[in-house]
Image (cartoon, rainbow, N blue to C red; front, side, top):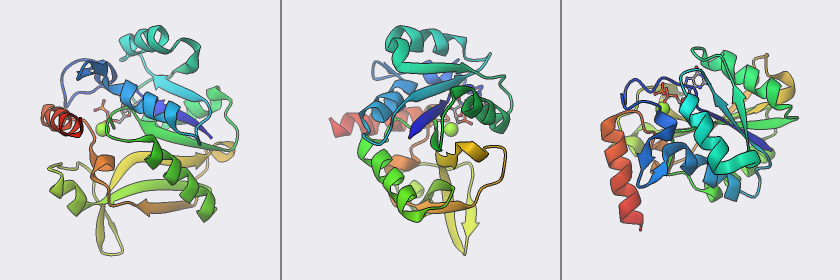
Length: 203
Ligand SMILES: Nc1nc2c(ncn2[C@@H]2O[C@H](COP(=O)(O)OP(=O)(O)O)[C@@H](O)[C@H]2O)c(=O)[nH]1
Ligand SMILES: [Mg+2]
């Protein structure tokens, strides 16, 4: 399936300018997600949804990836509206992965296994969550928490939707994975620091 990376947010909590371009150990933050998607065997084309608040991201992507990544200009300020616009502009058919640009610890095996799970489940949509304790153990403070049958879960920013019905609500399978790497979402300076430490430990 194709993937669309959402990259048109304000990055206000981080306050360091365009978040997708921020350097993390010498590499732009969004490049971690893009390179992971490129290495995943179940991902075909990759698109990035930029907005008027992320013009440098667009330039950086064109220089770094040329035609290997399709840049889509969205209006900004309306996440769902921009996502729909990006899906429709991409020309993607069938299921599409919608993913955040601020998840530098994901790896391609995780992406592939989420897609395999989606295919097994057969629902039109799938969203990935981690249990709140997984976040806490990894030293991450989540900003959104849901109660699923008494279990507190945190959305990770990895979703699959049926592009042919993108304007409709879709039956969604909640995939809960106990993996702290999925929870490592860079929103604040503290998150960025934590990510640096985790990446350095891994090397
Ligand atoms: N195109 C687009 N992307 C968005 C929008 N809001 C958030 N994003 C992207 O979605 C991802 C997750 O959002 P969040 O962490 O809240 O981003 P932030 O607002 O930049 O801190 C980031 O990669 C953002 O760049 C939007 O309105 N339009
Ligand atoms: Mg985020």
